[in-house]
Image (cartoon, rainbow, N blue to C red; front, side):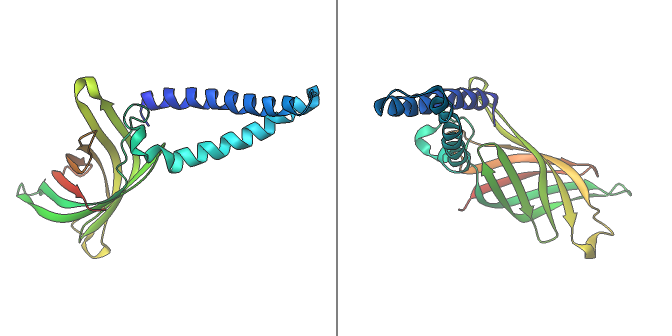
Amino acid sequence: MTETNKRYYIWTIVVSVLLIFGILFLVKIGSGKPTAREILQLVPTTVTIELVLVGLFTKWIWKWKLLHPWFVVTPDLSGTWKGTLHYVWITEDGVRNEGDRDTTVTIIQSFNHIVIKLGTVESTSHSVAASFDIDERRGISDLYYTYINEPMVTIQDRSKIHYGTTRLTFDLHNPTSLVGEYWTSRDTKGTMSLTKVE
């Protein structure tokens, strides 16, 4: 979630709580003069309604295109992405190895949480932390994430479990492709080019 989204989110919660309480209060007044106890009983009802609305928003409503980008700045990248991962690494003997691998990336996302999973024929990885860097004035729309990579057991003699970081750039208004680079704790690096398939 971006800082702009956090501000909108907090203000929206405050305004909607006051609005819900106000509506419930007006309904209560319409059926007679409420006592102080009856007014206080509106609080748990207000909180319950607000929690339901917040749950619906963070899970589904934030993805509605009509809310982007004026209200929700964070793009919806959830889905399956396919493409190519180009890798480069230097062996202990100083030999440069590089090549390409087909890769599939799955992004699971809600309004305030994102998980990135990547798979190739030799390994799988999943994010342990992720964050957006979005600033339209500077023309920046990037997703950064740190991940742990777990190679297949049969190749761990030459490819150990390791950590890495990836930066993916996308079009904020039409995120159908992700292009970026990665680097790892074992001094490997490379690039990625992905296209959304579903």
